[in-house]
Length: 440
Image 1 (cartoon, one colour):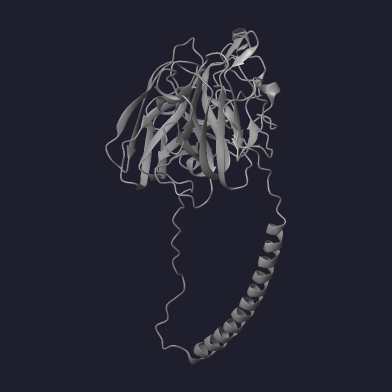
Image 2: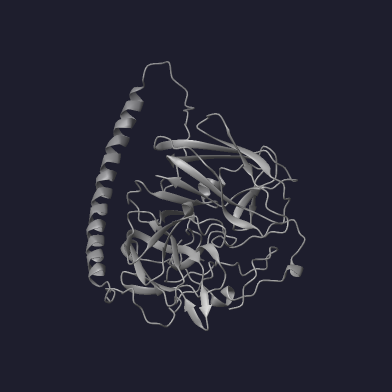
């Protein structure tokens, strides 16, 4: 499976790193009320009503493009359409869907050769329907500068999992949740600010719940987990709180839940840290105390003699090992040079142009099932992980009618990427009834 990108760089549409070509315009919040997948990231989008393109140079191994899906089917003419390219080679697009939602997966590649690449997206407008772009998310190469970058960290990241106390529980492979008073989350992070994103399940009580957070032992900040209407569906990508901005460095976040089983639960889907790091903070090494007895007598001559003999022998062994290591290193370098010279170079195609064929873009050769993995790109994550594959049969599956919904109190558990990508339904049966599809 292309697992959700545990740690990835989140590039907002307003980033100066993105190059736009064509009649793009900026938007602030006009699409926030549509669908079940929450707001656009930072409530900002770039839109276009004519053919246009955008590109982003990055260094990494997985990448994903997200936006707002507002598709129009006019007598069989799908508008808009789009196609994505990595280094001028097409990776296709996700299949068209009539579902309107933010945080929609447009395309992805999850198994790139780690290194520098250029992502290009071409949007084609055939009637007058706006194409909306939101974010690009990728897994960065080791050593890449993360200055002024936002880092998304999945709730199933090992360091995050260690931060929950026993009052928290895991919801499948999707998120973490608590319904117990005083449940604690204590997380060490490197950066200058942090945003907490969760979801609100409709299967559990619809009563607002209090909670609080603090950074570095400061006075707690209270926040409320809102209650959604009883007849609504679950909502995702909900920003529960955003910390203040602190000096860039090491910090500790403590979150306490003050609700209970009769209120809306506190959930965690992912964190976004400004100027963060993709490397988990390492725990300090334990201090090892000596248990050897201390002698009060004079040092033994026998001990000195034995120590000298052992020391001399150790020097000889080290010299032999050094000689063997250098011989193997030279041989390894020779083999690497031979292998590099045999590497197949990719075909180079002319740079894609914004004016594409009138036929809709073909989907990527990879399937969209986030549990699959192939040589394409599906980044799970954010914003998701490595090359992603998609199963169109899954995407086209009809949602159950409301009468089929279970009355169980266990919230629905969409796939790890679907909670951020509006078009990633989980192939397994769910309690929650997703939004009805409008006939094309």
